[in-house]
Length: 176
Image 1 (cartoon, helix red, strand yellow):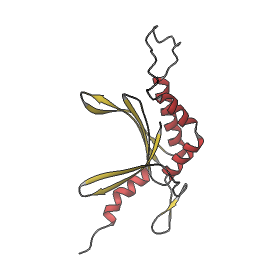
Image 2: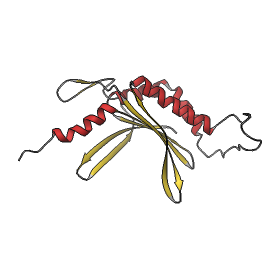
Image 3: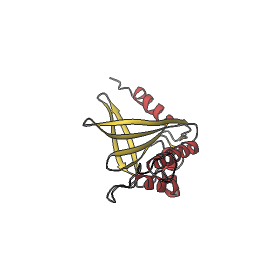
Image 4: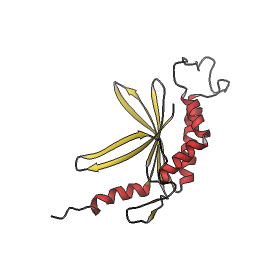
């Protein structure tokens, strides 16, 4: 199953912590207000794709790509393109001449069909709209699908939200 998570990051002197919950309600829409009533528009997005698996008894992440999208539309396009790219590599056409006979074998019915899940996510307009709303609201979006050996993760977040997060601790200085 492909899961879209809403994720917030909290920082303090001990480090950065991440709280995560499955996406439920829609946020603030495409733009949201800051504490002073102004409108915050998130114009640039950082996107990552990573595959996680076990190697030598440890969980290892392999970066599959990064893209700094200048617009929300390009961030969504890149995430869909990478999801399709992963699906095509996991589930190629067996008749393709690049594969010798018997090189590809079917997996058990109990194994999640990650390529089908990723393709379904790409084609789901409602999911795309939810991801767009989350990103426009300045929230980190994580799309994850996994089978019995590997987890595939697509991440996207607003560069503006990252900048605001870095400057926030400097704006909140205790006076004593």
